[in-house]
Image (cartoon, rainbow, N blue to C red; front, side, top):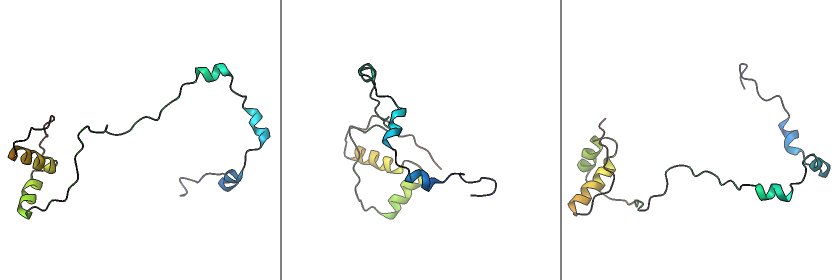
Amino acid sequence: MTASRPGIKSDLKKVDAHRIAEAEYDDAPELTDEQLADAVVARPATRGRPPSPNPKQAVKLRLDADVIAAYRKTGTGWQTRINEDLRKARKLPTTKSPTTRKTG
């Protein structure tokens, strides 16, 4: 730690080494049947984007360098645009959400 931000003034090794004695459990009373009946089980919140019903598949595809360069020049989302163009070429239905084309 730096002089402006001193470290913890505690002996963490001593804290880690401490084992709870049976007598220490007396500090917390046992839960009653009524308390247990009123308890609510909390589930951890899900984080991130929800799973897609139609997930994309990662594939290794060899394309000409000039094709890749042309798509990359279009900016963020170039791989999605390749997917859209392949769908159009094969006359497959388009996806529900259109891609926002950003350049830069």
